[in-house]
Amino acid sequence: MANIVHFGKYYLPDSGGIESVTASLAKGSVNAGNVVTVVCFEKSPSTPNDVIDGVNVVRAPIAKLIASQPLGLNYFFSSLSAARNADIVHLHAPNMLGALCSLFIKRKTRLLVHWHSDVVNKGLLGKLVRPLEKALLWRADSILATSQVYAEASETLAPFKSKIAVVPIGVPDTKLGGAEKTLPSHIEQSIQGKKIILSVGRLVPYKGFEVLIDAAKDLIEDAIIVIVGAGPLIENLRNHIASAHAHQRVILTGRLSDHDLHSLFSRASLYCLPSTYRAEAFGVVLLEAMAHGLPIVATDIPGSGVPWVNQHGVSGLNVPVNNSSAIADACNHILESSDLRRRLVNGARQRFLSEFTEEVFIKRVLSIYERLLTDIRQGGAD
Picture 1 (cartoon, rainbow, N blue to C red):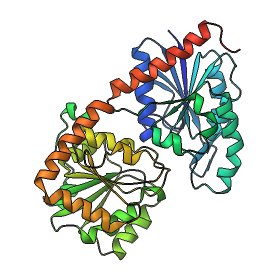
Picture 2 (tube, rainbow, N blue to C red):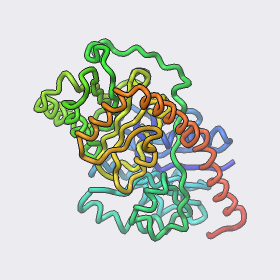
Picture 3 (cartoon, rainbow, N blue to C red):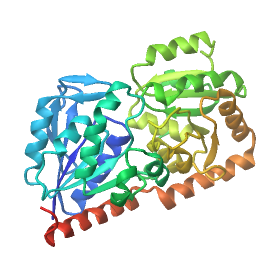
């Protein structure tokens, strides 16, 4: 039995790609007999410290938010307190304050840095955090990259190749849950029986939702785009829909319950990820689409794991970045060709089962934990 502490930004019930990864690993580690604590920020003051699926969750208030990076002294001290007796600290990066905390943990505590993404397009902030990132990676005992493609393209990771292990993310097989196909009445009325092109994510610049909205005008008549999520660009996207006269072709649902989101996945005809740069490092939501057997149209982001996750011609089609016409053409091609769609449906489901299940993911990470723990038992570096 080991004491494992995760330094994350957020945790359940807050949702997101990194949050779902943290939750899977934390719960999987508890089920393997370990003591697990997650230190995170609280988005809402009403969310208390608690125990979720056997995981101790310590939440700290956000004192300041800078370029999506939450900060606060309470987080710093809570992290150090939780890590005091930890065998392994598992840091989910990018997390500026979590990275700083990692430099103050005991040397005998093994540090695993889960490199979800480089700090991309953050301007001056990105330059300021580079020395911190370098110090963090020097301190790390092991670095997890989510794909070989991303690891090789990252200039930040380049000096630390000997520490890198590539472990693709895995998610629960939600299709086995038998999600209901009923939707809220206002969404049902807007869809009106059309073929759903689904896209899910925070409404932030790198997600490329404006490009997807621009694609609406070139889609076949019986297709409709449904964008699920909340974020700072909500008004911009509403205005973009209005200026593109796309009210009948694009729906913004806001954040949905798990039930309603799974129902949309079950009802959708295909999934589209229109992201525009390497801040989209992997595309965890693609795995949920594959689990549901949805064909995917994704962008061929240079240096990102996305076009590797969505294997072109197997699970879907990859198209150039920032090209609304190419997105529309690919969507239309899948929707109009029953043979192609059938082949991609089967390919997506099989690719999920062979590469991206939660069970395989947890097993791979637990094996890395065991290697780090063996190093401790054998009297590794102090």
